[in-house]
Length: 352
Image (cartoon, rainbow, N blue to C red; front, side, top):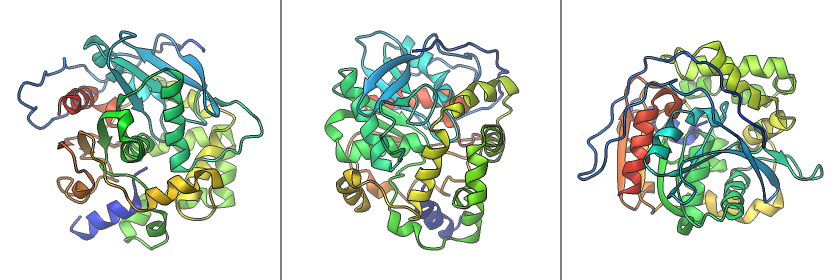
């Protein structure tokens, strides 16, 4: 989830398989957005939970992976790649994708490494999850699908991944939607203590650092229960039903899921070193590179990881055309809780 350094600073300032459609209870979450860019189109409002599944999940060999991804919209439309976070999967975009597809976008929603039907091509590939490794996975996917440039949109791990590609490979990014702002991890700052409230919010990160937490994650039933509990904490207003969670929890049954999640969180706080193949990228990211592509940042007002204020704590990292919006009454899983607001941000970022 979100970068501890950013949140601590803010608080210190004052606070190939077919998808199986399942029925889902519609939520009553509401969202508000800032005024749209003059001339920009407003998307059609969709009630969260209107859609319950993707028609199919495709597979493509890309880099180190056989990537599972959902696709919607015309094959030759402008591309939007939507990236999920933890503990979520492609269904965070189950309502966003149809909105954008109806507007003529080709929408690609991949399972990140260790999730869903995405598999490593070789049993010998280390199951690592440095931030740059996940970004390179997405670039490999774009290459495999012959996508030269796309709008990147994400939250949580997805925001971080989209931020990294926008910073290091801006020529591949038409525009960016980053929930939570600038999330590129600077590992050196992760070694410093944060304020107590921040440390409290990161309880699962410390849990995963222990042998006890490792055992919980490696037990399929226990990790599925743990991830559901996280949903309730970070999205306090989201009244999701059992079917909604179970649909996503299928992605947590990937045989590499525990290894990838544990590695990512342990790596972030310096408990383990990354693979040398990623060192040059991590060195660049440690310098906190700026992002110059057109960007809309979103903050979910009820997300415990959202910095207080109007995005000013990370505004300086974005040097190109830029808008910021705070989405009221919404928690961490912003695209699934407020799909209309998220889709509108994609359209508006594309027109900045």
